[in-house]
Image (cartoon, rainbow, N blue to C red; front, side, top):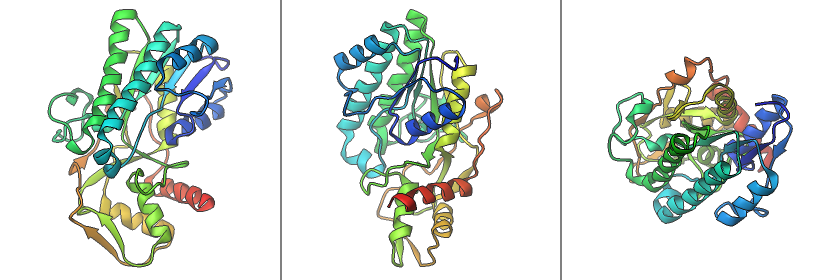
Length: 304
């Protein structure tokens, strides 16, 4: 991308979108098109077309969407597939129709089968059944990456897609109903009187990526990757939820008891992405989990 290119960051107020804006500005990209939700309803096809027609962005980072944790995914299944499909399809199609030079669509590691071999390679996509708790969200993300590939094949569009592991960081959502595990635990430990209760057994393993590192990877891919098929973005390091809780307790200064509510679902027992394809291209994450948690907690404590 040229430094003066007009770059549309869809979802720029969210966890990843705001990180993309920070990383772009730090790298000298300042011609950014940032439009708030109150000004543009991304589920409205005509409104999205009009925006692309009027503003003519050169590049698009598609980070917008409805996101949430296990509870939100379990109780708003229709919203998760419908809203995300509309947002992604509207943006991808308008990008094609109005001559966008390149687009990167951001998905999620939940696109992979629930019982994938570990670590999870890109080619494992559609090789088995999805994790039931977030299947609608996963299907919407699979549809977007397949649309990017289809438009590349049919129309020659330079549309690519990336699948990051679990993200956390600055500007995360701390809503009790929709938040993911790290912000939920930060909030619990910050406010808690002993004991703190964790959903599930805590003996499931997850991989976590600081949002600004993910944004850095997206910029790297925008400048260095152009092909069919999605790319995993991860750290290659996994941690149990119980160990994660101990790290967050340390960062927040909590010294009380930690309990597990085994009546709540765990989800996949292990989920670690194989990011070899990306690291072989020369990109590597910069932020350790402990340092990332410190940055996330500092952000939370200054806001709440």
